[in-house]
Structure formats: structure tokens, C-alpha cells
Image (cartoon, rainbow, N blue to C red; front, side):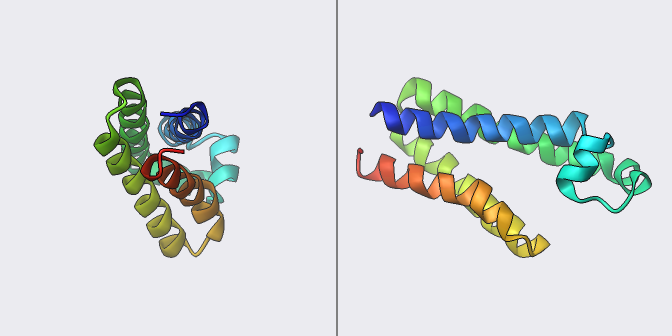
Length: 119
């Protein structure tokens, strides 16, 4: 696996660890409320358990990507990159925010190309 491929995948893993922290620990803070465009502090409080669950899944995606990098297991890389891509597509569609697609899916799609074509 090339250095650039490892860097791309590591970047995606770091993004997802960051999403995990935002959703699990910072959801009700001004940073979390602003980042996710939540309508109020009360709404953040009311949904913090759901957000924490979502954050946990982002942590699993990140951990899977890190493990796949360390083991250089191509099928695992493909699986987790496809999961990230689909999550970004669905998140963008369901929230009507193209930014989610750009931040989450586009890097994963680029990394998929690098893994598939051994760039």
C-alpha cells in the first residue's frame, strides 16, 4: 500500500474519531451545537443519547480503518471505506446538506480508488 493511500485512509479515520468526540462528548456544548446546526441547547440535551450512539458507530468505523491499515487487509479497507461512503451519502441525503457528502464520502471515494487501483 502506498504512502499516499495510507495517509488518505488515516485522514478518514481521524475524521471519524473527531466525529465520535463531537457526538459523544461535545454534542451539548456550544461547539457541538454549532457544528451540527442544532436548533437549541434543549434539543441537544434531548438528543444526546442518540448522538452518543451515532458517535460510537463513527468510532467503530475509525477503528476498523486503523486496523485495516495496520494489517494491510484490502477487503477490510474496501468494506470500511464503502461503509463510510454510504454513511456520507445517506447523511447528506437525509439532512439535505451536501457538506456531509463532501466531507465524508468524497475522501472515502478517493481512497477507494487508490486501494482498488493500488495507487
